[in-house]
Image 1: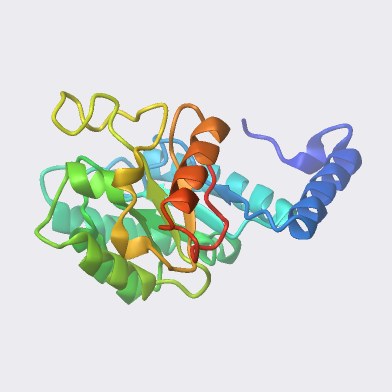
Image 2: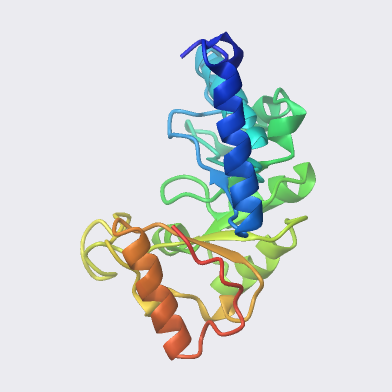
Length: 233
């Protein structure tokens, strides 16, 4: 919106409330993360879009710093007819980010343009963790197995890994498998994730209802007994 927190008339109180949120998250072992909107596109060929994206990420960086979030997750952007050059522009955009964003920045594979195989070399080279979205990978396969990508993605993290899960609205045999269901089908939870110490972020429209249902089903089937209790929306 073009203003800073300290320009607001009650900035002191605002910062105090953010500080309370940070302490509450610490005390209750809540991991906080950010996932900026789809209009954040660091590899756009339009300089004005990149500038706006960096400005938006700087805002998220300030919020993340205030509440103690350790992840600011983005997609790679568009391919624009030349994926290799688009990824080069992405790196250029990433290198313009401040340190408070850079140390929290993660990349996620999507369901239209960039698969894990596309992003992993960049993640290793630039030391950016990969948020592995298994639903997106199932919608846009790249020849690598879920087991292979899971192992490779784990190696990109210097803190507890964060992965995404969702289920298709109309099932895997229906149309538009990219669309998210209200709930998670427990069969969509990868066997390769069983027993890992990871944060699994649930992307489902029923939110806490979906999280609790998945947790109960994982525990009852003894799949998730050793997975850290960080399954959340």
